[in-house]
Image (cartoon, rainbow, N blue to C red; front, side, top):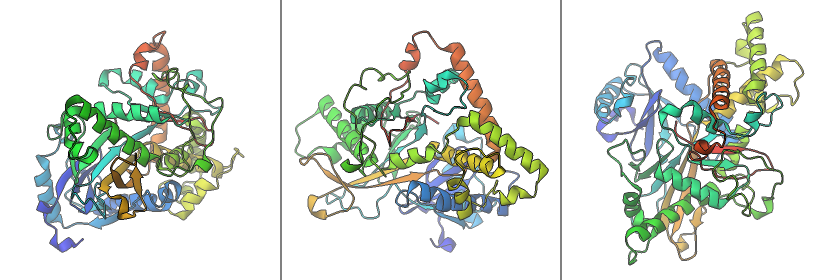
Length: 476
């Protein structure tokens, strides 16, 4: 990227979150911070460099080299940043405009544009499709530190919906430990029907489908199906109307499922007995009778789950350890740096996570290790999965290709994990208070038959190494 030749007209608005705004061109995305009156240029650059270091030195070893792109911290020409800010302002959602883009530091995170494929082989010259899914953790904790029995029976997400009852949130999918492709497909179908912030589809780098509040994207499922028809139905197909929409969406869902499970190895699968599932699941009784298979080792879901499970104590078990660390820092404030409370996110930070004792020996090393493990698990619970696909021929000989059925189109694909920012140490007390509020509110408000809750959740099951766990897709 030639910084001295940057032109705001080469970039387009891509999206934004609470703390950053993203623009893209064909090859790259730039993630720019939103303005904070407390940040200097040096602080802004260090903040972005921390994200790069954390992704490269911590999350990449845990989630896998092939899934993580750590990016690069860059300093952009200020005139370019100011002109870019003016250009994208009119494209931003009104609800996000209370915060403005940082036009003073010029600092940004540069990443590859994962909505594109570096080698797109479609002989029909169709642009690649990219599906973005946000997985959130909802596994049932097994920690002995949990004091409310309901947390062993109902997942955090379902309880959170009661707590946020006024905010129109719906969980659209759960992965509870045993893999069941039918349940996965049903959950993704619900994501498509109610995408909110959980689910987006890009075509050639342009977002064509997301939440219905966005006036610039397709507004219903049938419209989406017609738009995607050339990818999944032969050009001479006479199928029309509702039936063709159903076929196209089913094929899209199967491609997504296949990509999420793309490391399948039958030798590494097994069944699990005595599994624990969220009792609020709509599918808890109906679909769990089906044959189940184990989550494929080293697929993207397996990697995310393994990292999320670093939260082995639950926030209730972690809170006393956090207080131990706080007391130690009060007594020995100079050790904050050596304990890497605020980074640097280096190899030694990863070693503190990997070498943490399995049992509490009363040491500060154990407490710090568990705190860091929890922070890493929270990052894995808040990441995004990007699945990029393009049609290809059987004879293309690609290493990464998906075949749904021999008579159906072949796709080359890539799977990546994004949004891997370090979670602040200081947020742990807030998480503890929030957990208590959510559980207590749920216990007070739950209806006797839980029917209202069941109607808001559709679960999606899988298992790895017999562990009891659940992931959930839901709005941020």
